[in-house]
Image 1: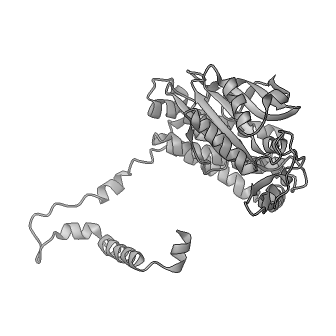
Image 2: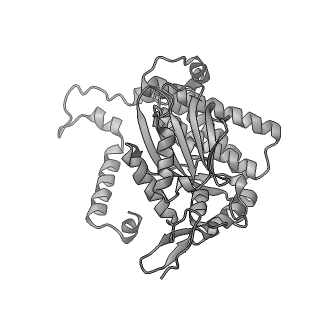
Image 3: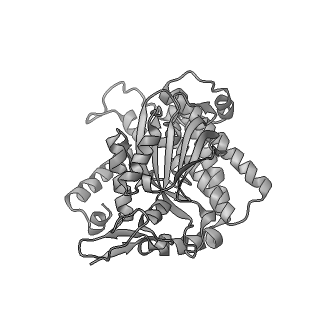
Length: 379
């Protein structure tokens, strides 16, 4: 049976890491937030997920909360630092417009995870926030509990170069630090992640220590820099092509890929101070372009898109077919039926596509009627 652990939050058996997550989800869901799942792309902070960055823009009401795994390659310490790593979790809350009682709601969330706010020194320390890569900034505070920073609290003023109206509020909890405080431990790898009814416990180290060791080595020593430079350039081009097709959401995925490639290059130590600023500006240009496209094509607002238009002026339209290709797709008219029926012109134009289509359908039918063992495992 698991032993009782006295914690700073004043509970005999404090909540586990996953208890903290689920309690926060339940609490914010009760206030009307949409509980999302983590975004499936590499991000350096929960703020970078489109549910925060893009949904901060425009007049529509939006309330969400979600856990987000975050990657910061330069913060890796091979699992040897007790409170710092290249991967960590944030619990993200975004509410637009910001409610008048948001600070009281935040304090209520601390109570929901077992922290008696009346018994602890909870301070809001002024700390305005800025993200150069997103072209975003806001008025904010760090929130400290008994001297430990556990949350960032920000009223967004601008995202992607656009004013936020109405103003959304973001609350970003550092889940590892918050749970360290609740459980009264000084090493994040000692955090109890889960505790079964049979008393078996799994720690944060059981779950992530090996991950931290291997990814630290990869980030600092192994990642292929030539590949990463090329990936950045390719994703930059892909972002512009996608924006040309007026698809800001998939285009924004390429922005995130550029950010991660840049962060890995930074960890490998191959970017000078001058180059670093140039790369940040390139990412910012893409992020602002995605925000402009989002405002125009998704929100439907009449905004200044002159920078976006200039950026895309020489980008070929990926949806436009070349003249030769378009002509080859024209099926010639069939003046009279061929012997046996059908149109010989259509058959010639189709080439062997009909055979391929038949072959594909046959394979698909076989797969449905008799799935392989490997396909079942993948599913």
